[in-house]
Amino acid sequence: MLRHVILWKFKPDCRAEMQEFLARLRALEGQIPEILRMEVAENTCGEENYDACLIADFADEAAMERYKADPRHQAVSALCKAIRLSRCAVDYEI
Image (tube, rainbow, N blue to C red):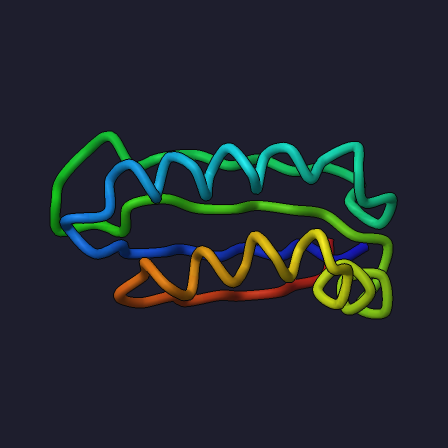
């Protein structure tokens, strides 16, 4: 099994768009079958930290790549790319 972890820092003037992105991202669970488990959270401590994160589990790397290629994910990802300042990610076996 593969765990996919992403952190985002968003543009300061995009709070409403960030909320829309996170809601749309959360809605993918149950829509895209490759997602075995998903957690989306906002930072609550310290402005110097990243603003939000995704922790998602997939059966394997191929399942994660199918998720990334899914048009529903692509639409959500496009919104994120338009409002983020930075992104970091790590994928690891669990």
